[in-house]
Amino acid sequence: MTKKPSGYIIYRGASLLNGAPIVVVAIVSSSNVKTGNMVQTYILADNSKSPVESARDLDDAAICGDCPHRRGTGGSCYVNLGQGARSVMDGVNRGIYPFTAASKVTQLIANRMVRLGTYGDPAAVPASVWRFLLSNAAGSTGYTHQWRNALGLAVREFCMASADTEADRDLARSLGFRTFRVRTSDAPVMPGEFICPASAEAGKTKTCAACGACAGGTASRKADPVIIVHGTLHKRFELSLVNQLIANRVLHRV
Image (cartoon, rainbow, N blue to C red; front, side):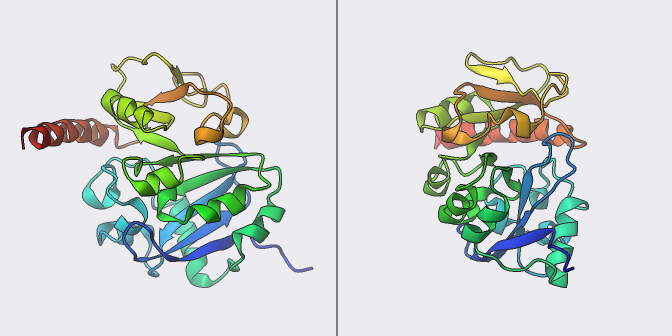
């Protein structure tokens, strides 16, 4: 009996962020404790390099755009590029994932929860790919740092705006987004926000698959989740907030 693939390539083409080649792989099962057994989608620079090498060479612009947390620019991204993303890119290079249109893969993952952009920004990919993929799904989660531009607006229906500050949240809400805000431990929870139930501070009472609140505009819950910055690079996150505040002040003086 032929073994079923562990994943499928659902898009291979130009990044909408900068035109460089990217590849999107849907991994059909996951042991991720926080998210639960969701279909995981990896958006990767299609250049045969490992994600670590791509970040080092700044090729991650194709999948992360101008995200302030890009590893390639010394940011605080929580994704461990030496684990899942590296393994998936290795599989791409070895040719173990068949190319299958998202409209067909959707039949294979019917009634499953799907995580858009386990690594990479969903706005790098044509929104039609995600719509096909999610057409028979039970639900999804997704986040974009491109919410200030048209590419982010294209995925607003199924992506949360990744907000780094209270001001970010206010602006994203004014653009019609729901938000997922990362905060420092001393920052307050704002009105209309709730603590992410999959977070350590909430006691990890639910997985992302069970919660389903981070589904952008399609979610039934309209309040916005917030989480204390986590991962080994939390100090970089705090520094990035300072840099963003400085940049905003300079911009407003011009």
